[in-house]
Image (tube, rainbow, N blue to C red; front, side):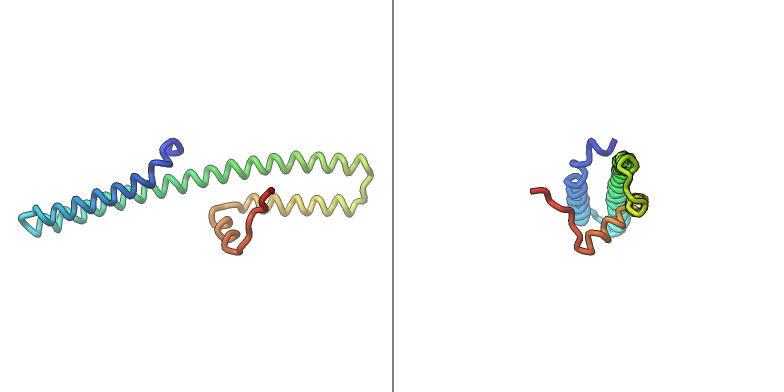
Length: 135
């Protein structure tokens, strides 16, 4: 559901922050009593904080779902290609060492896919790695 509205969330969050800040400033000007302002300002701040928290949670959930879908797609593609390679290796009579090397590489890829997460992507980016760009 959030995916449809995702491009509206960031400007809406900024707009809400501005509106709520203006409300607090207006309350300072019109509030006859500092006690009323002391009660209203934290309420406005809590509403804004709750909204920002909900938006962040929705974005995190969307990213986790997307990573899961990408993981499944890649796993399917890799398994299909591995089956083709294994069948070709058996048909051509390739040495057993070559087959073991391919299986070890496939296990490493599988492990990497299982560990794929926002944190692992952030670590990968921080290490200075980048995707190859096709020219």
